[in-house]
Structures are given as structure tokens and as C-alpha cells.
Image (cartoon, rainbow, N blue to C red; front, side, top):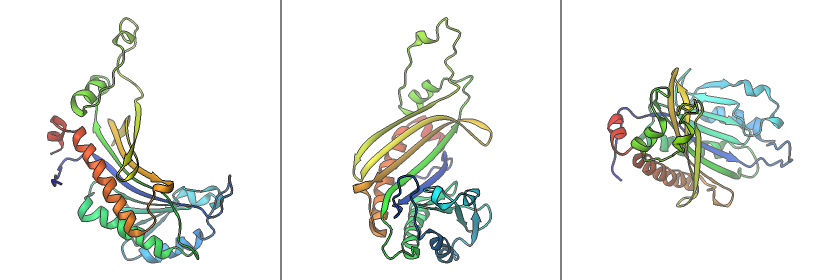
Length: 257
């Protein structure tokens, strides 16, 4: 695959998520009795690479009510990225502007998963419930003076059309205050679902067009070992990367180059 480096990439955040099955399967209060020990064990395992440890406000929520909520962060230093986040049933790896797949993010996924499996204190290894690879991108956009549907059509090969008569002699301008469109498609390699979302958002106090791309595998399709999880992440990244460059082909790609 051709290696392409974008100097002005629109990436806001790249996220890898692993959700594991909570052993206590109470329908309203699922829990993992190993979680409290896991937090301390993970702190020890991550101390060399991520010595700065943060407790989030969600730590005030009882564990029984905090299923799949992030409660702790591990960083190299205060306000530094990337970060690893941990909560009952969830561990994530997050990176921002310094994201590089081959040199940094993919190897970090491998180390994060390895340390998680090694640190997990249960008699049985955790059962992976779902894996997610997610990218959040954004470009500045003037919604009052530009037509977002034309931008999507001309710059991103995405055609969303509303009947023009909706805005003719109705006093309604064709400038949405809210934009939130999501589509999802099944994938065979790897098995799972790839999703796209386009939304109106804010970044650094500027109006933006946000688009997210993410791949999710769950249930019977989910990998269960460090090696197979990294293989999954590589395959999911290949699909997302292919879609990303096809969406920005042309003028938008030149803007990011």
C-alpha cells in the first residue's frame, strides 16, 4: 500500500477500544470483581511508559453502576498524549496530532493489549466482547455562508439532497443548525461493521464539519488474543484508510497535503 503522509491532516483523535465481558452478568448491575485489583496492577505495568496517573470524576460512581465508563487515565506526563484509559469492562488507547499508524499507534495497541492481559488478575483471562477502531476528523466550515451539502458532494463524493422546494418561499434557509448523519455497512474482512458519521461540531471554538470513521467487531466475530487483536486492528485500519483517501480524493486531499 502506498505510504501517504499528510502534513495538514484533519485528524482530531484516533481511538482504539477493547470491551471485555463483565463476569457478573446481572441485567442491571453487571460487574467485574477483578476490576479493583486490575487498576493497581495496570498502574504497575504502565508505570514505565505512562507514569502520570489520573482519576476521573467517574471514579465517584460505584463500580456496579460504572460499567463501560472510563474512570482512570495513564499518560507519559500531565496533559500529554497518547493516553490509555481504563474503566470496568473498557480499556482505550487515544492519540491526537502526533498520530502515526506504523511507527507508533499500531505498536502501542499491541503493548496496551499485552499489558492488559498480563495485568488482569482473574483466574480466567478476560473475554473480549467488542473491538473498535475510531477516527474523528474535522475541517473548519462556515455554515452561514457555505452550503454543507454542496461541500459534501463536491469535496467528499457524498451526495445528500433535500428537495429544493423545502426552502423556496418558506423562510427556511438551507443552512442546517444541526447536522448528524450516520451510515453503517457490514464488512467481511475483518468481520464487523464500518460506519461513517457526518455532523456539525466545534473544534478550538470554530464551527467544523466533523466526520468520523470507525470499525467495530463484536460477539462471535471478535478476536481474543494479543496477536489476533493486532491482526484485526491492522485489517480494520486498512479498510478505514482506504475509505478516508477515497472520500478526500481531489481538492480536499491537496488541502491536507
